[in-house]
Length: 297
Image (cartoon, rainbow, N blue to C red; front, side, top):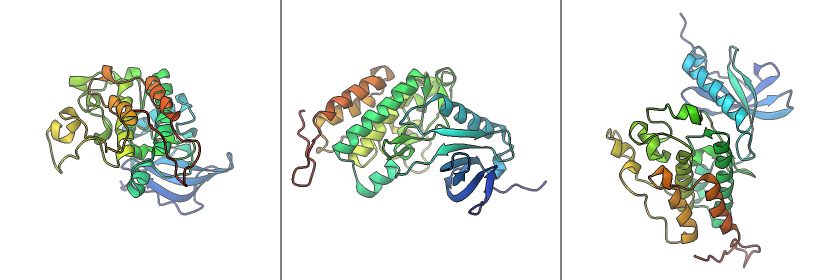
């Protein structure tokens, strides 16, 4: 039996499926590749997320793509990436996502440092809004992090590849998510579960902490560490302090989202309300070419 390629290697103009043509490779992971593509029916540029050739016969990977397509169909919100099509029963299983112009939040912070309040606070409101909607729809994203946020207008929360329904999340027994942004109950579902919407609030807090400070909320684990408290320091230690230049009015709701006890975290609509209250103190006019909020701590 011939071993399958691990990459599609589509050239520009190659047909991915009927009326859908590759433009260029955007990136990928161990299970998927993402291509910028042209869709004749939509008459628009889209993103095609496609299973790698050596994964097309893997039931678990295909099931994951099916679950992501279902999650995207269920969550239809302005701040969540949209899905236009899912081709699952075919030689090249893939989903078709909207193409969003803009950098990832992770890239923006890495290149230019912390976000100013006039960017950070609207972002916090918009992400809280999306997470509130997901909660109402009884869905949990489980991977809220700077890399999964595209800074468009409005910003978009992307990658629902591990999103779960409330019902499915209750059966999670092993760690799930991206280590640095996982709530304690995601790190240790057996001991600290069950996993629910508060896990996404933790991810929101970790994301906003990094956007406000330029660094992660918890220490990076040492290479090769095996113990849970080394891999997931959030199980044992409090978050770092935010920089002094971050006003208390901003720091307090961010740190509230990082409360270890899920019951102690704000709900998404409460988080949105806290950040919305800060919009009132954002400047309306530039002062000497710069925007200067007057914070009421």
